[in-house]
Image (cartoon, rainbow, N blue to C red; front, side):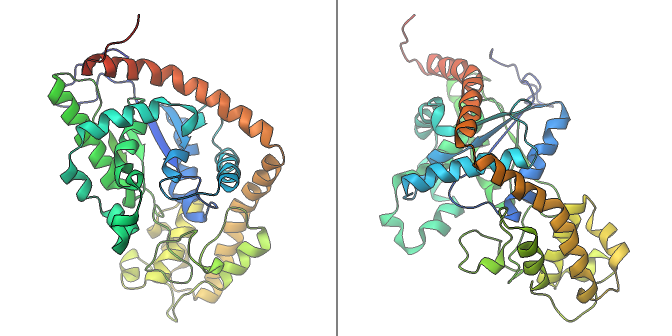
Length: 349
């Protein structure tokens, strides 16, 4: 892409609008992944903006992964994207390691980012805990690779959960510093897109904790591979309280478990929380849970069925990812080459 001349009113005005986002293939998909990401990814295809979605397998190996499991999980994640409505023809869908420009641009950004910026990354502190001296350098440098993932495509928008917002802010800092240091307006100042009733889906067993595939209790989450009976059973057993549902969102403020289930209902039904509560306010959870279970089964079980079908043909998944990687490189290669030129790297003709 040619260098862009940015305006103060809209610093990305000269860039082609483009959405990029990715998910790690480091374990099974959950309802949180679907509502917070996959459902929104599919909907974004109708926006008229180019959409690029990636299985970020280079990020996954910042902690050790069993190689066979990583291959299976990458294919399962691809199946999850497709089953959730991401069309490999309408979007670019690929796994990160097939596009080497991600790692190449990440090194440039490692040299742009400042140590102090990395030290402020709360996710690293959370993941490393008391063992920071023993974790991989990759985990520490993870945000620079994420910046490369985004800026390699001059992405102007990145749909993320609240827990990733800080990394997108770092991406903006890296883009701004690169542009300033080299006197160019080459990289866009990417905007994080955080929206929806359930961008942060919480545990079914503890509404104060995020739904996680690493939680030891399988009852805490709905897996996208769960069948209809399992989905319904988990919702029926989800933690709630003894009070009736309120008629307005303010009534959920101190009720984490209740708020979580209402948020899930709202996100699955494409309604606002206030719209849901206008319909169900005053009902007990003995009435609301069956409503939520029926809705979840109707929305999710077709996805799990389609994922199962796709996983029976791994060669076809590999073909689709390979085709997506070729399309991704048609965008990535010239942007990396221009980056090298700006930095002063000597390149062969």
